[in-house]
Length: 161
Image 1 (cartoon, one colour):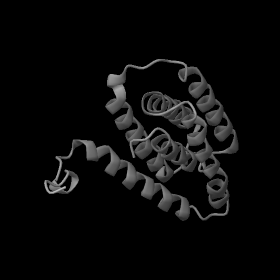
Image 2 (image 1 turned 90 degrees about the vertical axis):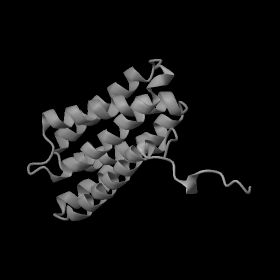
Image 3 (image 1 turned 90 degrees about the horizontal axis):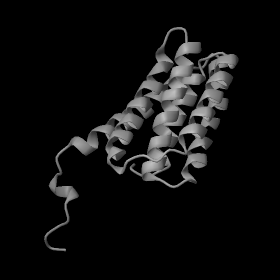
């Protein structure tokens, strides 16, 4: 889960699930803000030392995005814009530091999750979207905490090999 395309893809999937609970206008504005952020920041050079911070920010943003499906009124203008701008920053950081330029379009393909998720929410079946969001929260928390855990013998090369 430390590759260039997968963490940003999961982050953008969480954003898509969050935006499924927004109005169509909020969705459009948020996606435009995301595209502008990705385009503007993809040209920046980032210090290699920021890699761990970028991954932690990516996973934390995934948790926040996925958790917003439980907001009572859904995602509004301000929160949709904030989620999109924040997501754009961390997606760009992870792709620039741990991936290749081709990883950004690959990750952005996950935004297509918005279509079936929005359809489910419109059909008054949001529980499926909330279950998917809960799965993303669990994966993101696991991936965020693994670098901080001590190495166990099962992860070390065996002395007999």
